[in-house]
Length: 126
Image 1: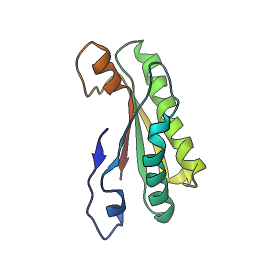
Image 2: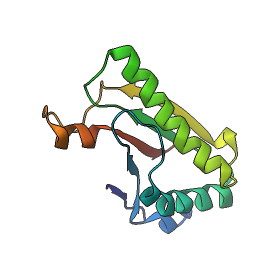
Image 3: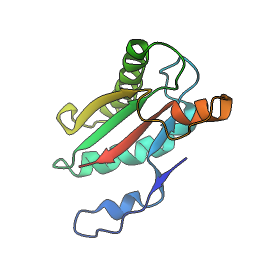
Image 4: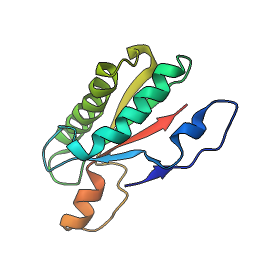
């Protein structure tokens, strides 16, 4: 998993140093994995404590499936993370979701390892 390294004391984002910012999904699924919950709880706590903070959740899919299907799957994945954060008390107005489908891969292979890395949601602070 990828971690964010932030040391900006003025924004309080130092509390997120080392916290994962990429969350992976199983094939054809948009269910938040149990191992993602601790890091997402830290993102939620930061957002609740900083009501002016904004986050963009970028959903992605692997190359299998049609472009349209993968766009919808990326959106469902981003919305799943969004729902998890709002259940933790984050205001919906702090969250934006976007889907890139299969268009922005991080791994370019055509095998299960590459596909796993591309089935993800990336958390980006604005």
